[in-house]
Length: 324
Image (cartoon, rainbow, N blue to C red; front, side, top):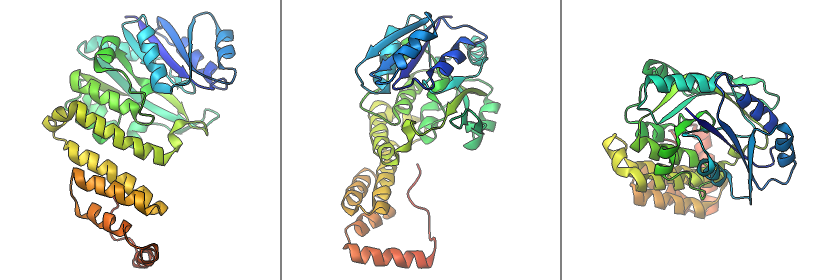
């Protein structure tokens, strides 16, 4: 089995050597390592060049991580693709344990794993993301078998860290790769499309250490909520029929994404954008809560401030929009 590792990099000089070292330290060696430099303005290229001749270094104008990953997949020579971000690391047995699982279940076309989170210095702060999200026991019981109704399960809770994925290259190409226009959640959007067409699973083994630091792309809540609308709308258009068969109401999924965005605007005091988002939610799937917030967002600011003060005095009365 030939494995190509795709590492997108943007201004990653500080951490990329550790990522590369973790790939080279695999107990089952990979076939090639591709670093796709997405227009870095720091010393990323020099650091990669100094790290050894076993790296295929590709450089492109800045287009975002999705375009960088896509270029890596298209250029890869291996039949299987593994992804790793330039500031993260693998555990030494990542590839060996995933390949062993694939040999036991040859129908699988994508296999992911658990991950831990570390601080900038590399100290573990979250030992298991599956455990954090109450999914560890489920995947332990699954035992590496293909997950049933996987696309719907993913859209309820994304359990696939991109840096743990090992996927068949032909499956990724057939699914259409990442959509560069989506900045946050682009991985979930692709994994859902893959899960709708091919068997996937997730191993309850920590195979990646994700580094949390100020440069991570996941800190912009508003941008993430905006892109969640894009992700859910795209997934509904691509595999809405599959989601329905698997018991997930795609219209409700999109409506909730709009409501979550609307609530962010509402709390931030941007009443007009909040109203537009809640109206979009109502068009997807009418709910009393979305109607209430849409109406409240149209109130004069002074009235709304008094209502908020009354609500604070009354204490919590219910759950805000936040789920599917």
